[in-house]
Length: 107
Image: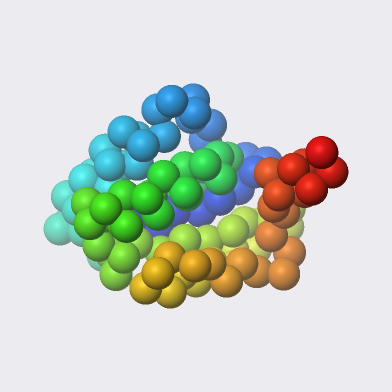
């Protein structure tokens, strides 16, 4: 299982141009980790764009949806699952900070 945690405070940052390739690399690492570790592989990222890159790879069929779990980690270090349906529409937790939408709305 590939577990992706969006932690905007303490997560690992990636350059925008690298998120798609990194998402595929980390997913492939997770497949190997599944054979070694019972809990699979967890990546904590500060890029919500990384989550969207994984969603695009799922939509393309490069990553199976059932092999990925998404979570949001808040400032108190609580993890809440982000649930996606088969069309990759998200049900975000109520405390999820959607900065991009907020910025675009303000513009």
